[in-house]
Image (cartoon, rainbow, N blue to C red; front, side, top):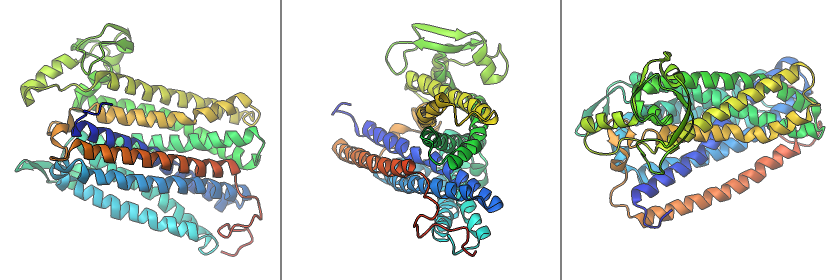
Length: 465
């Protein structure tokens, strides 16, 4: 990274780093909240101690993830005023409603019921206490929807009119019902279940290899493995239909995803391609592809037309004026493949684990358990690659077709000031990563509290509700 970078470039780096770091905890929290609620439901229905201990154990890890998600999310929001004030002025009338809904109807509810769940052990009835954790889980999902509705407006603006050079809201229902948001929400929640399930599977595998708390961790894995397989398959399926929608709404992004430079009938799906190392090389040196498959994926017809980057660039220059309207092609190309590749590996892993579980061979399959441990990184890589593709593939637009990124940055903010905050946030997040990692792995490695262990918040089966 050059010292001579502009304020715009530095602001983009800072927002990218903060957002990707924050998004580590978002799907993890959503996934762990759901599975914690599910395990507590099993305890409520069966009275089996192992489900109580599983609830307490995975709930602790959920709380660590939740705390870090809140901290990093607040920092992310500050950047809208610090580095992106012109963007904030442009979208403020649109974003005000969904973000207020997220804060009041989702985050406030989530935090309130999380407190009731933490301190309600033995103080609330079993049924009411169970409802509190389900309220937490559902509010994390609701929170995600409002945020994704705001982000989807940047991808596909709807329900607005332009007044004095700014977007003005005309229909909140159009914004909340944006088809881009519906697909993105479904894709994200499935990915969250995939992330939470994979983390549970990995930690359970670590303990099962050491024969620690076999009843708790074997039961946990048997719950998450079917969900892991189904979520991965459904995520790929929804991602496909989302790609078809993006082909209609943002054809440049999808053309860059497969490095299609010239409009082609019966376009093939690229397996491996190389080109000159610049943002838009305008062509490829080599390309290994499966004939007609890209046209089929994008439109459902193997011989249909796929618009190319060069052709779209010419169209956009005529419509929006001179400039480069292609994203960094290699970033879009490889991030798309990393996301899809990780999703397919997770689907395969979930199916194999589910089969081993059905056959009663899961606890004794050392090879699978070791593989599950290392595979825990895959959903995080997939999520990060997905967000990089979604956001960088939209460039040069910060709001597609309405506002270019270069016009959204805060004016009169010198580069050295952005350098200071960039370095500060990066170091702060590095320290948080070390602390959070130690806390998370400490609890994960310790395992569930032993029966009868002194824990003031831990309920006992004999406690009156």
